[in-house]
Amino acid sequence: MSTSNGVLAIRRRAQHGLSVTLSAAALLVGVSGCASTSASKSGDFGASGVQTAVIQNAQGAARGITMVSTTEVNSALINAPVEKAWVALQEVYTTLGIPVTELNQQSRTIGNNAYRVRRRIGDVPTMRALDCGGDSGMPNAETYQLLLTVKSRIIPSDAGGSVVQTTLEGTGKNPTTAASSDVRCSSMGTLEKRIADLVKAKVAAK
Image 1 (cartoon, one colour):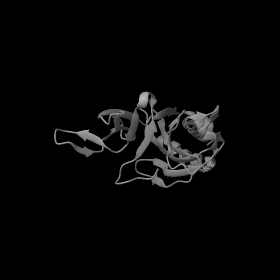
Image 2 (tube, helix red, strand yellow):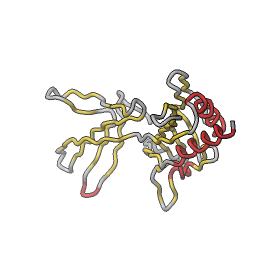
Image 3 (cartoon, rainbow, N blue to C red):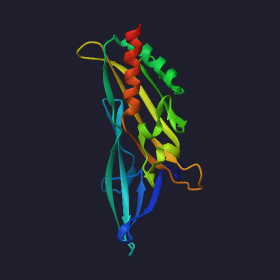
Image 4 (cartoon, rainbow, N blue to C red):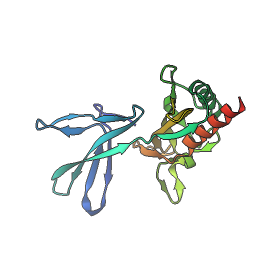
């Protein structure tokens, strides 16, 4: 999504004559009226982001509301030592054809922060992996150009073995129109489950 002065904006016309502007990088804090971003880590992997929405009526009066969007972390137990599961996870990204732009051996984290894809992620249809809205019964995730952030990591399990954690989120854009606004996509959990299932299968086969 294009930015202006670091602020992402989506304008849409709501019912009853309300014009809604969503600003994803502005949070009004303190009595000074300064604007800043706010994000908190959840287990240092997923995140919660705070948005400010400015609602303006037909007379020009405006008020702000805050909204919180959370990046969900999908976790699955792996019956294998951490190092073995970590090797398997890296192989899974290759199997699914996800280009790796982030690889941290120390934290055992792998992922891609700007993954451009259409229709399929490996053998997972994007329409089953993401909810980007849709028109006339056709999911946008099926036809839109998607820009995704997908990340996984391996951590020790308190019960023994290990845990694979994956997050998935992104935006979609209609490739057939000149519209510049992007649509936010939320995960449906299918890709995360597929990654976990493949890790389990690979460690079992070794």
